[in-house]
Length: 129
Image 1 (cartoon, helix red, strand yellow):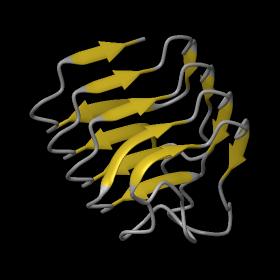
Image 2 (cartoon, helix red, strand yellow):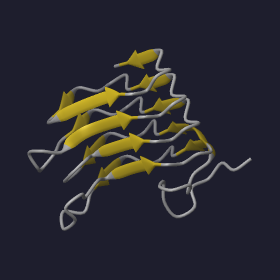
Image 3 (cartoon, rainbow, N blue to C red):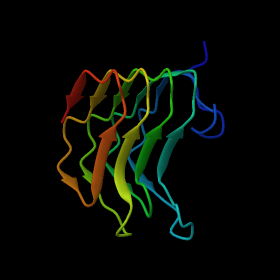
Image 4 (cartoon, one colour):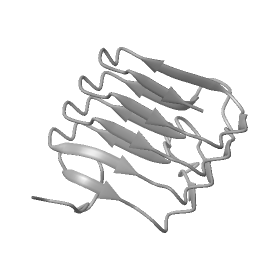
């Protein structure tokens, strides 16, 4: 099966078990109104996403947005420490409407400078922070 990201993580660009082992810092585009830093949207064949070296994500809008990934079962960011935000009304983390998500893991999260929302994930059985 597919285990790579081709172009982006939106609209089917990722499938299978995706591991980004060396991704450490991510910053959004401040010139975009919705300058999300990490967007994982509408990947119908994405089974799991692991970013275990991810430390800090700077966003203008949503720092991390994981939404509408129907087959996503596991989202893991074991070393994520800090989610700062530069715009008052953005989400630092938004995990929404992932029908098969059973596990969300962020073992070391210490600081969130804005809204943190996890909702409408009907099968979420484990949330670890």
